[in-house]
Length: 200
Image (cartoon, rainbow, N blue to C red; front, side, top):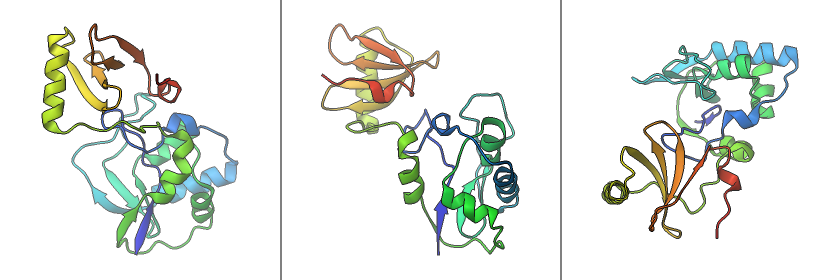
């Protein structure tokens, strides 16, 4: 059986097609919200990890968990209830209907598919078309180029081979796009600015 993923978010340190929860804030009917929260918290442990999760809203919440939970149909990160309770993040109607119906939990088995979650969350995802995570050797070479241009202490996240641009995270945590040609101009932005970048 294939479990359906829900509630997995974009990670600024490893950009992906997962949605940003900030773009999914909405309203809930009280009864549905209560039922969904209870359903999420009653999940069975599917998998545990050594590293703990963090809230993508940077609200300071530290009890986000380190496990994925399941009801035998869906699988979600342990901290998903926090996003609904504290930030009013919405979830796919299909999952909400399922959670409200309070179907019995079954033994978690099978693989995970995130296709439906990615499709539903597309409107909240960062468009990474043309961008890719560089291989180790390329990452090293790009880091050397940036150091020689006077931009040390950067973490290279993505590269756009067609435009010779690199998305880097500065030591301060700021996200910048660096053009890899002298004088190495850069643009400071946030992930929410990303879809509005204009290509020449």
